[in-house]
Image (cartoon, rainbow, N blue to C red; front, side, top):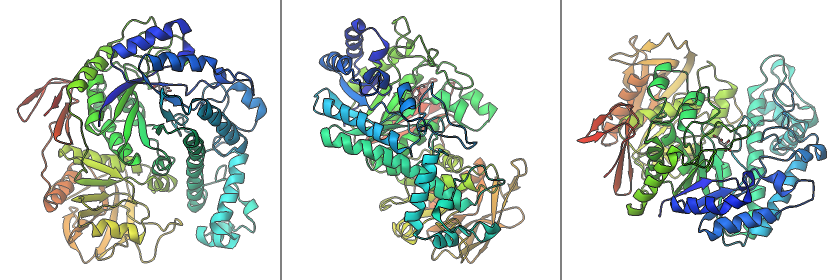
Amino acid sequence: MKRTLGVCYYPEHWDEEIWPQDAARMVDARLSWVRIGEFAWSRLEPQAGQYEFDWLDRAINVLGQAGLRIILGTPTATPPRWMADKHPDMFAVDAQGHPRGFGSRRHYCFSHQGYRAESRRITELLAKRYGANPHIAAWQTDNEYGCHDTTLSYSEAARDGFRDWLAQKYQSPDALNRAWGNVFWSMEYNDFNEIDLPNLTVTEPNPAHVMDFRRYSSDQVVAFNREQANILRAHSDAPLVHNYMGRVTEFDHHAVGHDLDIASWDSYPLGFLEDRMEDEADHKRTYAQQGDPDFQAFHHDLYRGVGRGRWWVMEQQPGPVNWAPVNPAPLPGMCRLWAWEAFAHGAETVCFFRWRQAPFAQEQMHAGLLRPDSVDAPALAEAFEVAKELADAPDVKMDKAPVALVFDYPSAWAWDVQPQGRSFDYFRLVFETYRGLRKLGLDIDILPLDTDFAGYKLILAPGVFHATEAQIAAMIESGAQCLFGPRFNSKTADFSIPNPLPPGIPGLGVTVSHVESFRADMPRALSDGGAAQHWLEALEHQAETVLQTEDGAPVLLRTGRISYLGGWLDEHGLARVLNQLCADADLETQEMPEGVRQRHAGAERFIFNYAAEQRNFEGHDLPPAGVVRD
Ligand code: GAL
């Protein structure tokens, strides 16, 4: 695999005379790809049915003839103003019942059939016009599904769609009543048309109702994307890609990914640290100009799974962004480090966002590779350095990692619907597990529940709300060491407590008799170090106790190769669990210094220093933002 760089560009933002210079400078900087078009609908169709494609024809020619490969985006994240008159009810509606207004982006409702037809129409026009264009080397569908909280919409269109979806799933209101347990609080329905969306209720709605609405909403994203994908495929052989976001869990990315060829994501390490991570002031201070040492890698590994091996970074932070509570500049060298880290995790391409900083509108304070006056911004030199280094780098083929970590989007919805303790956040639980594994120097594949787990040495499935017998068997029969829990398989697919009680893992000999959540400042100490925080389960068992609380309650139990963890452990407790599992799985581990991480890619090993100080690791002196390739 040849690794390449690219950039996001908006020809419609600039005078046409500078397109050729921009293209030449991109080529000089050894960028191979340019992504265009994803927000340009108002320039492609300024009035309903009045088209202006000539400028895009010319932009594609200029960029393509300069030698750049073009990723053309469908512009459906930004329906123009005239569309609001044509479809006044196409706006997404928030949980309080307020329609989301025009004047930014992503204002459409995925369930609105009129907007779905508009999306197909503009996609087909682009696909027919450019499907055979030799410069179009990839297509991006829409932009960042789900960003700005846009997966869930409580519109009339969503309500109607949800009713149909329920009727298909349950066939009769009786079956739905039974599945949801609607006898509770007299919530029974006589007709599917009586069922509303689960917002604006007096107190919490039935979790089974909400869970089905979450599934329905995710299915709409999948369907919306599939419609575009089918049209693009009918007219073009170029690969299809979508740019996912960081820590967005409201739709099933694995399901969307099945309809595409490549997964990509938009990596903003400093913005994410401030805006999307738990409020831990010391940690945020330590990594303010580098980003969290595991957040990018987590998404690289997650989206490599979503792309079934093929993945890119579509947008890479080039300097300060505009949207986090504070927006510092990266330490010198970090843009290079982030790009190399993506390649170390198997990225084919890293594109920087964006070419030139826009002097107008919402993102005028967001850096680019060029300043608004077209002078080089600091990231351009770092991008160029990576490009030169890539020229000498060998082609790489990624191997399977030894460790598989399950990420299951429905589990994120389930614990959002009924956390039973506000701090029980699924993403955080899986991410902390990932961080613990990375601190031991391990390579990790993040995978959906439906996976062939053969060949892994260690499989971890924390917090999975429901798994089928076949999914459990696939993990156990792989021959790996398996760690389940906390909360593994603790609900039926219909969102009830199963009988027999969880976790329902054959041969393990563990029953969760009851559970507790507790205050973050009241941890339960483990004997010999570490503690359970947030969550602890009471376990009846015939298994071997590996870890227990100071009061003698079992926390980690083991039968043969299967272990069950009945709590959410702090860093020290988790490290004890992971060290034990790795020893059992015959996995070699290394204590990584604070802020230092490693990743193997084929025959190469990369070491990254996220710390703001010099670090030494295995004889390598690593300055801040240092990258070693050996
Ligand atoms: C991304 C988005 C881009 C731009 C960027 C700014 O989420 O896809 O269009 O807004 O953020 O950081």
